[in-house]
Length: 298
Image (cartoon, rainbow, N blue to C red):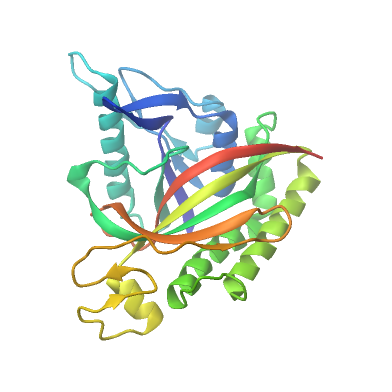
């Protein structure tokens, strides 16, 4: 199964007048996408075309698509354009999630919260994994084709990372508590990161470390299948702070576990936020934050 990401060509921010867009994608963000995902969709528009770094090289790989949103004649504010780009991103996710051969997720970079158009979204409970100083990403000086060669050569390590992330979700869901110590999936994830870090050092002398914020859509079906709670009725689940009857939720007391070596920490919480209405087979719906946290030189 391939993995795809639907990303915006710019960052979205909220201010007193509403949504607007800020900085474009950096070369490091593009390299992050190409290393950790198999396919990439970055929407564009005919009013303000947001180019992305190394665009010609990316399009030539056949792994990147840039569908264009067309605006009619008229005057548009930055709020209008931001809203339209978010709507297109959600519509693309709705369309491409029907592909049985690719797991697609939405990505918005460097944002404090996830933005979705109200007409295509609804409130839903999520398990959120905050990973600090974790993913190695090559410096902007590294050619796109070199990254793809590395990705092909190290496909086992990269595939293992994705598997470990899904296992963490299942294990935390099945056994919620205030400590991450002793969880097998956490230890396996740590080993996976260590392996990936080692092979990155062998290939790239300069690379960045990224924070990531993973958000899994949570449903009663997930809880029943994973925990074996077949008869929840209207009872609340205190460990998560989710009332399955009323639909309200409260942020769970944060569980923090320090991981060895270069990984500064892992934070797990449950909260309520927007999610696409369209169902998907992939519980990892959003990678809601990825940011550069430092440059490492070997």
